[in-house]
Image (tube, rainbow, N blue to C red; front, side, top):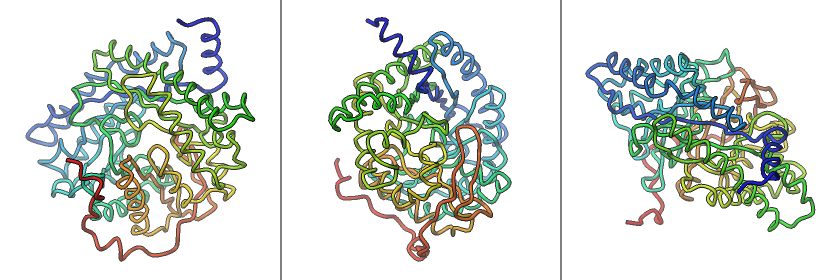
Length: 451
């Protein structure tokens, strides 16, 4: 039973510590929309999304008012579009624009699923589909794209990795007037999951039900605030406090997810436990790590502190919900976290340190601005490194970098809203071009053979 202290604590979390439900994401299967032509398929896709998600925004707003918990984003994820347009891949942009139009008319913040799964090989139709990504991201406002280039079972498709480096660079060029904004809506995965509610990587897996509600919770500010009360505690006690705090945050997400699914006539999918920061002060994962005793995020000890935080969040969240999934951990996007922004601007955190941190956090190198003249082969090498971490450690990793057109190290890009701003960070000057051009498949590690 809740007592008055629980109620007051929750009110404080919401009003003073940035507790929120970061997203309610409706997953929609598009498999029933496949028609003989791209135009007919695009119309069927538009009609289905409009029908299934017509009450999503209103329902989320109603739940926010009733429970007093802010719900920041209302999103939709769909079946990877490359599967829907396999018969006419070059005309995939028709479906992409139809999805973006539906999102705009419904008031959806982002719609994910302009995606392809090429972790073991790239079929001809997927090759053609990938080439449409820059065009579509430049022409749409709410559509997000993702590509899975590797997995722990299959290895890493280095031909796709090479191609994605080129596609990232072209996407930046096509959105140069907005600091390469298109790249903020494009993520390259290893071990992508089917029930992720967070953008830009959300898509609705083919193993999911027709319509599913997945919820992503947040609350870095809540965790940081709790740690202020135990400044001298040892790390065992700090981890226990984080666990208890994550439990409370996740219970709020479970409540909203189950009720939203009931009202929308959808399946309740999962609660994603991720601590997702924002550019607002008091809502930073970096500041949690500094509250644990680091002078600045990026110094020695950062990876250990992040590992402890990530583990404690998962342990607390798993006890609070029977349906934990998605990515579930601490996100470290540079442009979306005020502490990360300040550390990167001061030169206290590097791309190499961020890569080390991705071994123990949720996902990977996220929302990082790099010089606009970075070669495609270097971007591909960054993707390959991160995919290797995911493949060997059997975890989801990803890369979302923005080669900022006409910007150099020390300049800044600004996207506004949750996407925030970021200093342009240096990349290693060594050339990996010959390695990337070899192509082929990096084989899966021996420990992946578990059948």
